[in-house]
Length: 207
Image (cartoon, rainbow, N blue to C red):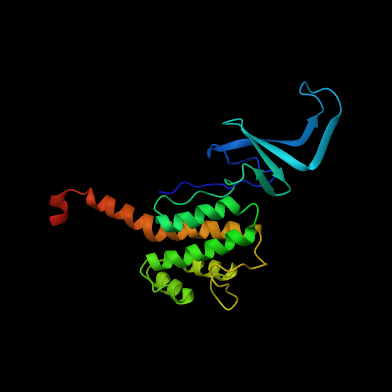
């Protein structure tokens, strides 16, 4: 089953490290610098920047406000291992640019959801109808409601691949989670059930 990934957030005491991916405690510091490597000389400090240090790997993550500026591509959870390759490429590209452009990342993720619907056997022409059909096949209705809130479907929907000026950090974080959740529910879980069933003794199945 999919592990529970806790995305990094400003001042949080623990989350999955952007460097090592391990869920670990984090220590927080304001960024400061010294004129000399030894630490002596004029000192500089800017409270707009903070550093979180991972207890597991001791690697620093640099923050500007609520955004991670280094490392650049690891703030959001990685793609589900069962995600189709073409969709995974869109997902990974969205991860790479999300800290720099939430709008660009959101556009890619809406496109990824449309592609995922097509991969799951839907026509891929009307995402509203595609999601309704997936709900009929077992996708939780709450996912449909969440997709409406982040403007994937519904009266306020944004066309997949289109930039929307309203997209912000919370919207893109939700979209990442929804792409992974749909993959988990509609691809990973059926595969795992098939694997469990396939390991049952043949005589039990015949009986």
